[in-house]
Amino acid sequence: MENLVYLVPIVFFAGIVRGYAGFGFAVIAVIGLNLFLDPIKSVPIVLALDFVCSIGLIREAIKHANMSTFRIIAGGSILGIPIGLILLYLIPPLWLKLAICCFVLVLVMLLIKKAKPVQKDSFSKKLFTGIASGVGTSSASIGGPMILYYILSSPLDVRAQRATMILFFIVSEFMALVGLGISQTSSNEVYISVLWLLVPTMIGVKIGQFFFNKRPPKSFKSISLPLMVIVALVGFAQAFSAL
Image (cartoon, rainbow, N blue to C red):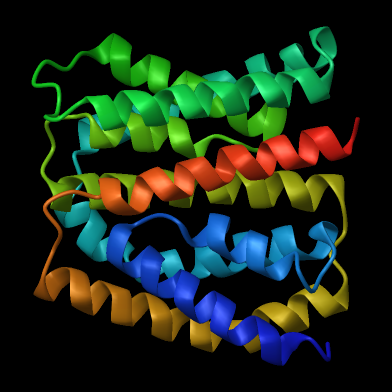
């Protein structure tokens, strides 16, 4: 509890990124909160904060999102979750996480190489992206980069990209929270931390949303690429520390 004062600027900054880009809160907040809290506490706190604050973005997101794309990738993600769980039984978790992190870095290089979005889109590409995200989420807690890669290489404009990602991550965070609720019981410290950090997080989200509506970016690559690299590097660090 004494560390809460140090957590406020972390969630505030992460909220600004989330409100502006539609993604990135969990990556920034988990890494920051892990400096002061155990992961068993920081993860449910971050998921709860991100989910609650995302509720305020739903109305605008529904208005601008590509609902067909959202439904397909969300459905694919649900299909991918049991596949990831099966892979956990077949492949050692350590090596599976390393493989997924390498895959994320490949996606980063592909995004850097592509100067323009792919104009041709297909149902199978969207479905595969959703399945890959579900597999990554359930097997290594790394599912966001797959969605980022697809959305940023799609022909959608930035407003539709942001809105579609907001809706997708709301669904994925809800499923993650349900899974955490089933697998473990949260302590009172987690609930108190969420209540204390909710206001600065929501303020950050509103500020980010204000700046997006005032001056939306031409592309989210400048935000997404560093975050994807961070996700991969943190995954590598966790895997190698377990060796």
